[in-house]
Length: 253
View 1 (cartoon, one colour):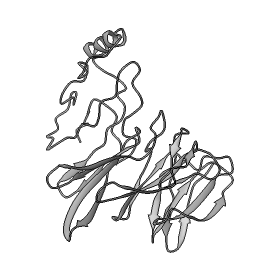
View 2 (tube, rainbow, N blue to C red):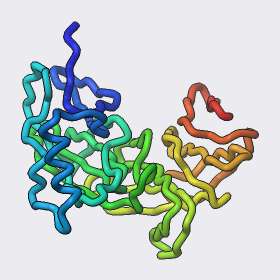
View 3 (tube, helix red, strand yellow):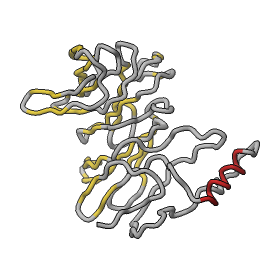
View 4 (cartoon, rainbow, N blue to C red):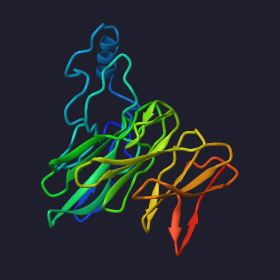
């Protein structure tokens, strides 16, 4: 099987029919011409717009027939924030005014969630769900029950909760309307720690973990954002929970 090189790290893929959906991450190596261009940019007071160091269709040493791509908002240089995609896209289907709509969502470390129509590749909506950051914004994994899109926001920055407008400096979890991206509610991590792990949803309950030393996990009402119960596992929770037959399975440490 041929190795495919996209010019940057590739997060897990999603396959649907004849299409593969990819969200790309950081660029860890680059040709000399790009490194020299970046050095010139770093020595400038103001970066060029558009960034002259970003080459179109950068898929180094690969043979890959792309049907379409979406380029998200450019980050300014000097220094560039960590705004790559840290998780795989998720496919889902919703009904808009009774019409079936096949979509795909990808969540960025900048805190933005992006939803595209899978049939015509149009951007349906994008929403800044929370603050981005070095490890923050959407990291490792979102979830959807097709009514709502749920993300974990992991950065410990000022985080304005909806609909209360209260401000938290902990990580938290955000629910958005899958049709229009409206933020329906957000829940701060009660133990005032970051929330790096992926989220899982089943039967209108959102499951999420915390990075605190006690390894708190939470069951959250997916509609209201109210915490239904919590449990201390004894070690930080960095991954997501698997759900089967009324049980949840979680790794910690």
